[in-house]
Length: 145
Image 1: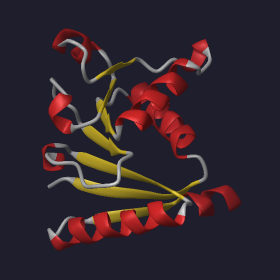
Image 2: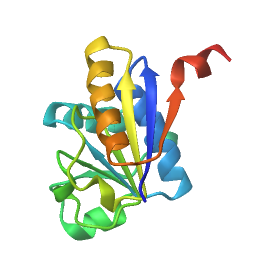
Image 3: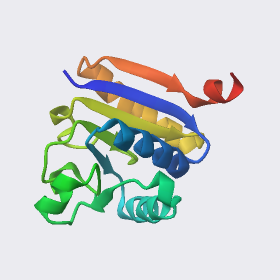
């Protein structure tokens, strides 16, 4: 069954996603990131702005299947855009992505914004209602340790 993890308290959701994706790519994971088109475009720009030593190999979901297969990270507006097998789904969107159950792991990144937290609570309830085991990672606690 798919493992669900909520990463709560990201002061800057996209900066946190960049760090998370850099770590995932370094570990050899194949990741699909989904979100609205503005978020995906900004994340793409942010990943390209990382230093050359922090390069994260990625492509857009509109890329050809051969390119997606080579990239550790695929950025898309829906799960359907991914043309390859991915281990991890990172959700930067406001709803539970259709097809999430095809992944070994789903990571929900949640900012400190009240509206974002409220939407995350709804996603949590949906996963819990389907009997998924959910882990919670409070990023604010990590900053104070």
